[in-house]
Image 1 (cartoon, rainbow, N blue to C red):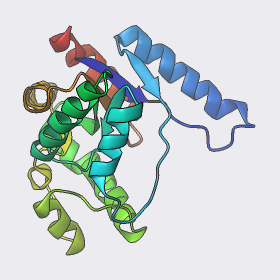
Image 2 (cartoon, rainbow, N blue to C red):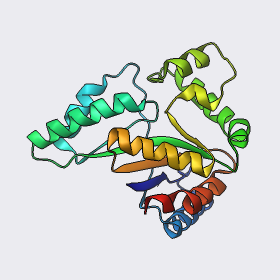
Image 3 (cartoon, rainbow, N blue to C red):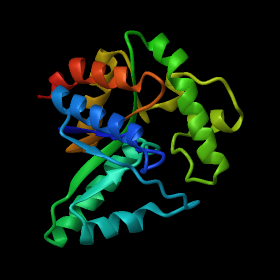
Image 4 (tube, helix red, strand yellow):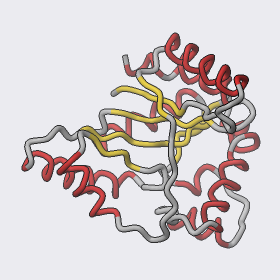
Length: 206
């Protein structure tokens, strides 16, 4: 399994400082052993159907990126259908699993320092009319503005200690057969998280 990361996008492409940070992050990620980086573009279309996108990928693309809001059992079923359809069209069928990653020395540190920002981001998606989370527990808790823990998100996140992240990623690979994982690191300590992930998680998959 190969690992990618989201390159921090410059808010203003005409300024040099954000671009310099992006180059610095790319250089550090390459040194740590990440395989690729991407600049993500978001598309907000309320209630878009997933199956036509899988079919389109099978006919025209060489890979399919499964969103971070999708639970593993649903991804596994769609990945199997995608691979079958792609084979029928004589195309490659790589599956890349997008996941939000929160990593620290303890789960408590992740829940206190990282999870609140993720929760606010997901609530922002909900207000914008983006497709909802596929975890019933998470969706209910977000709607009712409950205080959330990592357990509420089932298998939607890669979060916890380095050992937790390794265990969760192995479950992702076992259930979906994904060839790639695209990790998104968020928060003021995103660079430190990338470093910790590179030092203590990536070696388990090399």
